[in-house]
Length: 439
RNA sequence: GCCCUUGUAGUAUAGCCCGGUCUAGAAUUCGGCCCUGUCACGGCUGAGACGCGGGUUCAAAUCCCGCCGAGGGCGCCA
Image (tube, rainbow, N blue to C red; front, top):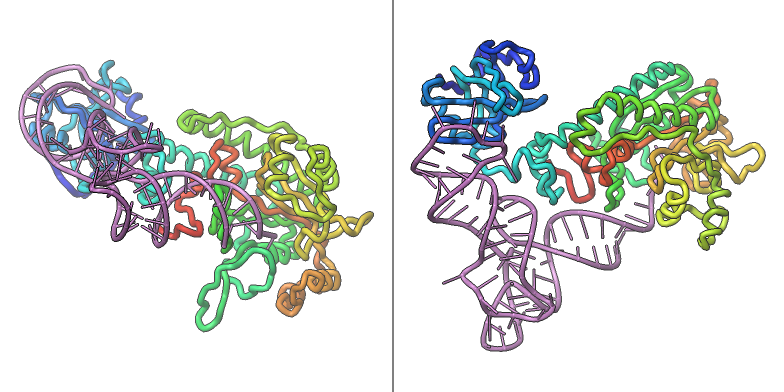
C-alpha cells in the first residue's frame, strides 16, 4: 500500500532505536531517502532521520511489488514513512532492517539537489548557503548545531548556578549617537530607530534591581567587514553584575569558558567524531597580559607601538603566536575604551578593562563600569558624545547605581574555537553579512 | 573604503600559464534498460557546461578591457 498523507500515522521509533527491538516488531519510521540501490527484484534504500540511518529492504515475494517499484524511483532527499516489520540481518549496515508492508511518500524530490546528503565537504560555502535548509540536513552540519545547542545549555546552566538572571532587552532602540560601530536604521512607525548593537546600557541598568543579569541574544552591526569572524547579525552572551570589579567578572568568564568546554566535550562525543574535531579543555587560570606588557612583548619582536595606540589585527596575531590558546589582555588605555569604562585608581590613563583572546581572535571584552553619573557625563563629553542623547540612561544612575562590571562574548566565535572551524558562517544557521541577506 | 584570488553541466572538477589537438574529458547527479544481499552496489546506454558584453587574432574556454557574481585578507568594529 502506498499513500501520500501523514493521516493518523505516527513514528514509533527513530532509526537508532531499532537495534534493541526483537525481530518481527511492527514499526513505523519516518525520514528522508539517502540512497536507493536497486537490483531488479531486490531494492535497498537507506532512510535517515535526525538520529541516524536505517535500511529498508524490498524483496520480490516478501513485499508488494508496487512498493518496491515506487521505492526504486525515489530521489534522494524525498520525505517518506515506512511501515513494516524489523528483521535482523548481519548483511544490513546496522544489523537490522525493515521489510515494509506500507509506504507513504510525503514529498517527492523534483529538483536536482545541489549536493548529495551524505557529502562530508562541499567546497563552495556560497552554494551551500543558497540552499541552507538542505545543507543543514547533512550530518556534519547537524552535529555542529547539536553541539551549539549543548553549549547554550551549558552557558545557561552555569550562569543560573551563579545567580545570574536571564533577561531580554529591547532590540529596537532610539539612540544612534553611542559612537563606535555603525547601527542599522529601521522604521519605527513615524520615527527613525535602530537595531541594537549591544545590550550594554540596559544590562547596566538592570544591576540596580536584579544585581546579576545575563542575556544571550542577537545583535546587529552595520560594519562592512569581510572576514571569517564578523557578521552583521551575531549572537552575544552578555553578563553584568553589581558589586563586582573587573577581575571578578574575569574569573566568571574564565570558569564559564572552562566549564562550557568541559560540558560540551562530555556531551557531544558523537558530534565531535562526526565533525572530526576533538574538544580540548583549556588549562586555567588563563594567562593575564596587560596592555603595557603587550607593548613590551611586541617591542621585542621589533614592532614599536606608542602607548595609546590600538592593537591591530597583525599585532594580535603576533601576540597570539606568543600566547597560544586563551589569555586575557588587560588594563587598556582609557582612550581606547568606551565612555562607560572605569579608570584604574593608581593610573587614570589606564582602564579596568580586558579582552579575552584565543590566539589572535578576540572572543570577549569587558570591564568595570562607571557608576557615578557626573563622571559618565564628563567622559561622554571627552569622547565627543552628546550627554543629552543619554539622558534616559543617565537618569537611572541617580537612584543608587551600584559598582558593577560585565562582559560580552561572541557566541559564534566561541563556537568556531570549540569546533575548530575558522569561519563563523559555518556555525550560524542563516548568516547575515554585508553581501548576504537571504535566505 | 582598499587589496588579492576566482567564475567550465545540478554539484564538485580537468583543460587556461604556452590560442588550433575541445566535436570541452573523467566523476557524481539526472533519464532509459539489465541485475535477488546491496550498503556512495554494479553493468550497458542517453542527456547536460565555458557568467555577460566588447576587443586582439586566420583562429579564443584559453590573451586583453569593462560589467556582474563569488571567496579571502586589510581597515572598520561600546
